[in-house]
Amino acid sequence: MGSTSVLDELKKSQILELLEQGKRVDGRALDEAREISIETNAIPKANGSARVRIGDTEVVCGVKIQPDRPFPDSGDKGLFICTAELLPLSHPTVETGPPGPDVIELARVVDRGIRESHMIDVSQLVIEKDKSVVGVFADNVVVDYDGNLFDACSYAATAALLSSKTPKWNYVDDTPTLVEGEESPVPITTIPVSVTMGKIGNYIVVDPNGDEWDCMDARITITSDSDGNICALQKGGNEGFSYDEIVQCGETSVRVGAKIREKLKEAQQGAQ
Amino acid sequence: MGGRDATMVLLDENGIRCDGRKVDEPRRIMIKAGGLKNADGSAYIEFGDNKILVGVFGPRDVHPKHMSDTDTGILRVRYHMEPFSVGERKNPAPSRREIEISKVIKEALEPAVMLEKFPRTAVDVFIEVLQADGGTRCAALSAASVALADAGIPMRDMVAACAAGKVADTVILDVNNEEDQAGQADMPIGYMPSLEKVTLLQLDGVLTPEEYKKCVEVGINGCKIVYDLQKKALNDKYFGNGEK
Image (tube, rainbow over the protein chains, first blue to last red):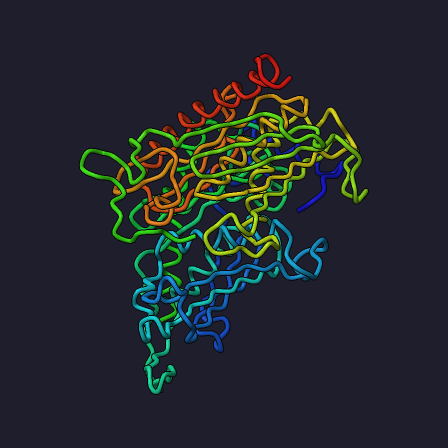
């Protein structure tokens, strides 16, 4: 995160040296993600929630579901909004105040991955067309930092949504009225999985840890859906990728993502 | 921004798109190098109905000073849309979208600019979208490269940009506003043709792995078309008969 120091330069040369021998600092294979732990329903007051750890990166996501007004041009669709925030306790360099470009990008990329996969069928979240719809808000907070916040927030939000139950509202006297005791799962069509890869020198590593994240030259985050299609992508960092690397990253993301999707499904079953 | 006609046919049976283009045809593109007197370098681009002005300053002193880097120069990019550039008036304050686009354009230009030659300085790129019609980030990035070259800043290559996408299950080049709103996928690409490196890449929309590959290929080909026009713009200014 942030400025490079002499120490970072040394770290980078060590990481590169290891990569030349096909090794990573923490002993993983280049295309191996870290162990992911997912705890669902961590926040019972939320309509759905998850606490996700990848290495020492830790994210808590809570889903709140409540009636809202639809956007003027889409009165037949509910709302889905996903955010991400870095808490000041997550890293010494994080300050309070409005989010900087890095955090804004993080939030937008996580939101886009889930939104573009059409994970949530928003057409089923209408209380009264053009008047009142159901809003699903997935808010991520980063509690601890060890690289790859993109995937950590994405998995937390996805796991939280999978475990979410939506209340039911009827439209009575021009107001949405809660129907007591009726809950149903949020309508899900697919399970998106984002896989972030870092480029260090000429090597591409899956799920960079904190040390790798701080010294990588560029990154690419690719989200795939349950059918193995690619539905969102974001390149970042100040280096480029060749055509072959982009194609390879696409294949890797679908392959690695399929394994992670099983983890998310397990967590969903555990929640029920 | 919003589509204008919900029943519009994005791709007809003859493979013609809503604005009359073929699937692999970019919109009309006009790039002009220079034009602003006070900026160290500038460029103006018309990309279909997009109209974008870019001014470059630097390398110059960094303010605030703590942002400066003793090892290298820094690049700062501001992408900004005028309130009158879109259908409904846009709030002039920078939106989260504009902040993200500023960041991805900055990161797309950094590999091209030899910032290490100018430690402790900043190069500022100001992008003003006067009229927007889908694909502004690509048009802006292409114009910014020309403006940087116009400023005489040493570069490894220019970054040319164009989007690929998918409408009616077909991969197309250069997605316009209607196609972005109603289509299935949009993939903006920034590419350095001489170095064969992709420096900007985003995607929203669902693509099969085959379509994904095809999109990158089609987009890169579009970038090459833009690249020729970028070079022509610089040629016209510095070696042509026009403005000297």
